[in-house]
Length: 194
Image 1 (cartoon, helix red, strand yellow):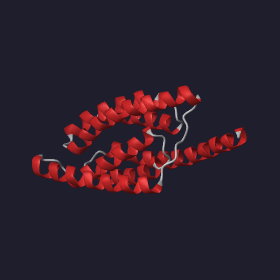
Image 2: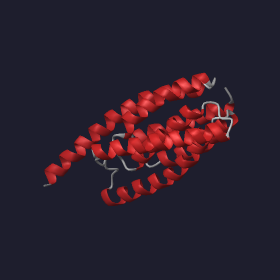
Image 3: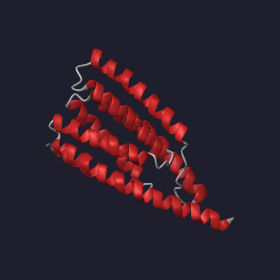
Image 4: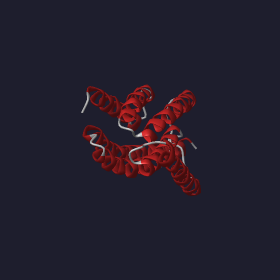
């Protein structure tokens, strides 16, 4: 456990906590966490996770601007619907992308756990995209992904990060609950204004 890992855990907890609360400051904290973890994962040869942190950074900018635009229009971060058919095809696409990425890592790098690393990266990227689009589906996907991450980080002796991801599981469950509650409130206020 290094000072870098400790600092990355603290910044990550703040970022995810602010995301659960739908607060705009989640984006700068999450960006700092991606930078810190990108470096940490590189030192542990988790190259899929390094590349994921780069993609997270790009999606982070996108999410920031989507949330800011929505906040300027609605003065709130509104929860958006996501069709089941869209969920299904995006999950299939993430699975295929993860498989291709995993095979690339396996054949072209000395990644520690290439297939698992790549698949988790693909689903994490999808979950981050769903977060940027304000879809509740992000939270159940994070629950599943983070549970698997806990095992991978224990395997790699990143115990503090494994603990962080265990906390992320609980935070994702709470985020799911909070966003469902907010969606019902937003839906109720739309019905009252009609």
